[in-house]
Image (tube, rainbow, N blue to C red; front, side, top):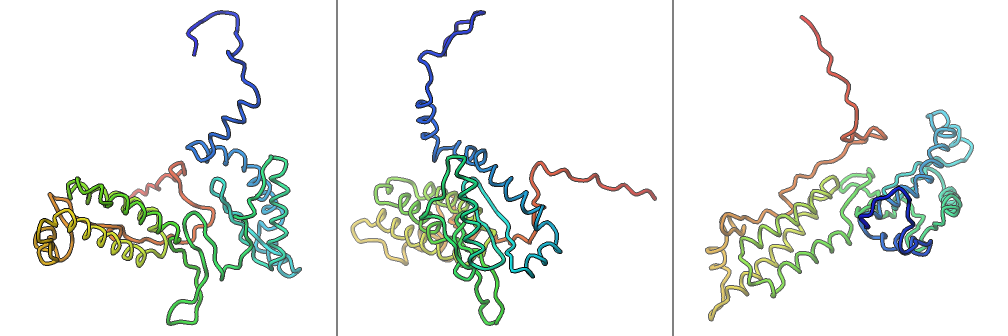
Length: 283
């Protein structure tokens, strides 16, 4: 940026063309500003469906009338450029909405990705924001519930990170440093997925990480005679088979408590939610 200050405005050097702007926007895709650009562009989609919701399905009576007439009811949930249209109706209602979404996006120069756009039944399930969402029968009962579990892709991603951290080229590290790094990665991953049916998944991931750590330690301290499992437990475990070194203990993903979200509709609290003042009662 030039440090010249004057009264006469000067043109940019060199001149910025539309082609330059398009290139800069293309570089933003996948970057930190990409979610912001998606929110700006897709706000038109939110406004379109929100207006229809309030006009045609805003009350329970309106939704009942639409159901009696054979029409579908729906609601959109969007996060950046990922969104789901949940339809209470038939398959052709969902397909019609897909065409309507395409029509809304067309004037913006956007289009739906065919490989990522699907019309599925809730019993078939779908993946949204790293979660597999599917209605299944609860084991031991005849009742069906909607379960949200970490997707296979999400589980594979954390396993790949663990493999990188425990690869043979990392054996120069101190065990305590490695345990601390693994705990941080697993806790961060588990904190995102703690609001689903994730307890069994957390235990399976911890079992995988424990095996990687065990092989890493035995290879690092093999020596001439190798490191037996009995010696491994005596030297590198504190409680049972929990690895510990220099004050660092392996806690894994299971250390994060699983907490379920109750249904809150559109009343989801945020840091900007205005809280009513507490009532003051006198004696």
